[in-house]
Length: 264
Ligand SMILES: NC(=O)c1ccc[n+]([C@@H]2O[C@H](COP(=O)([O-])OP(=O)(O)OC[C@H]3O[C@@H](n4cnc5c(N)ncnc54)[C@H](OP(=O)(O)O)[C@@H]3O)[C@@H](O)[C@H]2O)c1
Image 1 (tube, rainbow, N blue to C red):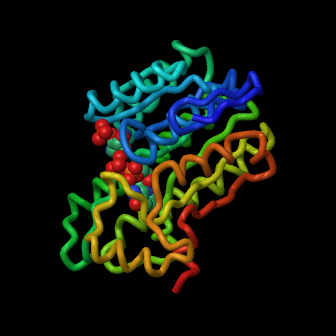
Image 2 (image 1 turned 135 degrees about the vertical axis):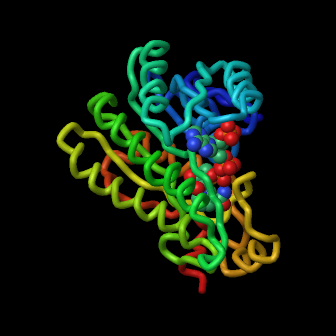
């Protein structure tokens, strides 16, 4: 832990506790595990009150809330499937009831079924598009209607929309749809000073990383920064976007990849 003489900065675990998001309320979908968890913990570390959303994994969500509470933060876990409009509405209802408003929405919920198109089942296609495209639509639509003026919205896509490999077709297609909705919404909400951006991770160590070790190693070799990403690498980019430092960015797609897409 690092000592500091600045009263507004304390350390909690590996991250410095700051107050840069004090007074903000954030919903992070899919934040019981992986990148979403790193994002919600980082937002709480920076002073936001946070709603931790999950779909099935109650224990994991409880763990996240306990970790945030233990670090002095303010968190609430709410189950809900982003591919169900009523569930998404409920997330906003619960956040408003507990914390008063919603100022930040991060859509990290995602499903990553991959495989060659020739063998891809229609049920898998439907699930990928239900969660990643329709789920994003429901989250963006609810946010557009409920988020406060000066709010900030971030959607998680994938670098696979820039440089697709074999096996990522339907997954990358569903994420490409979400990217297009983000840019349209940025234009629609700009007059309320609401910023809407995409963060596109590259290969990141989580349960959602379903590529073979061989594929991951090949991708790391093609990555200028020479390693696989960690969830915290992506979370820090999201916090930059939702903080005042990101105030001139909207409709952008920041690729948190270590440069993989330029490292052919
Ligand atoms: N990991 C990577 O290499 C990578 C690369 C590029 C993009 N991404 C994107 O980054 C985001 C996070 O990925 P990750 O690897 O951290 O995922 P992960 O480890 O698989 O975790 C997925 C999270 O989303 C939740 N979730 C899944 N389906 C949901 C639904 N229908 N409604 C609400 N929550 C749902 C899960 O909840 P439960 O715990 O209840 O299951 C969990 O909290 C995703 O959008 C993914 O596509 C990841």
